[in-house]
Image (cartoon, rainbow, N blue to C red):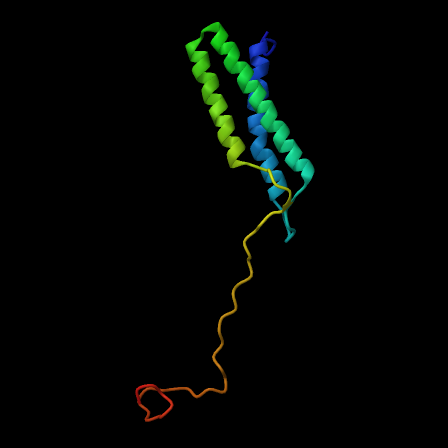
Length: 131
């Protein structure tokens, strides 16, 4: 029966953990309607639990593939472990606190001083640079 073999369970545990990295990342970083996104300590614990599950399942799958002597299985599990590592690094949730977001308020433009004289071309104004 599919899924009952220990090898399938290890692969499912590693693949499931790797798939949850983006889910956790976006769950803590997305905020709507002007709210600030905040990463709570429990989000950081969830991240490290996922890292642990991914590491243990990857090591177990690689050890089992090596013990069986299956080169294709070893290459496949190495690829899955590398992809899991990349996902863990890309979607890291390792520090609690407020998420830095770009400031979306526009910078104020300089307004000309309304009391200053205005230079017009063609005039003989002494206030204009160059005559």
